[in-house]
Image (tube, rainbow, N blue to C red):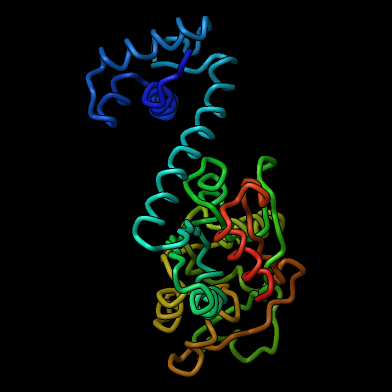
Length: 294
């Protein structure tokens, strides 16, 4: 009895898309062919995997179990292909690293440079995203290693210490708060905010901290990077909260000023996350060890 990897892939796609038609469109195969493969898979396993509803399909209890197993199998098959391809091309390792904007701006440039100098035959594919998406990518095998800001964590991942950063409030140089050595978060809530993308760890922290005070932050606009945030603050569109290390390059060139933020949550822990350190390819283990020493 052999389970066809294509059938597993189609099953995972159906669960992710919610309908057979959407899965067929995504995988460029006819809906009838998709339905036939899933029917054959259920017959082979002698188990109902999907429950049809008016809105589409949902996995049964057995289907949820297969979903996790299938993702692991598909990840392993992809890993076999990638690692063998690396040998054929003379490259000795390929690592998919997903990291949040804080790590990319503050720590990873120098650390990746020194790692690649030490291991020139290793390739690192870096992708930036928010912490929630990074954890999801690592859990589903789309990324080997993730760098996140500590917040809500998934139980199906391993977490390793990485760095600590310090949040500061940045204001235009002529802003009323710019003359203070430090401010409380409450003092900033009377002003408009420039924020990072909705769903980012820092944006969520600002909203959560304001709600704890019975307030709603006046997030006037959202930007995708710290340099854009600093430029918007300089233009007088609001104040912002950023890691000091990420904004430091802009303190001299822009008319902005950092002000210490007097809050316990202003000190943040960044962590590395993996599905299983012991199961990582050798190159990925070397990278994790290197980053932990950074």
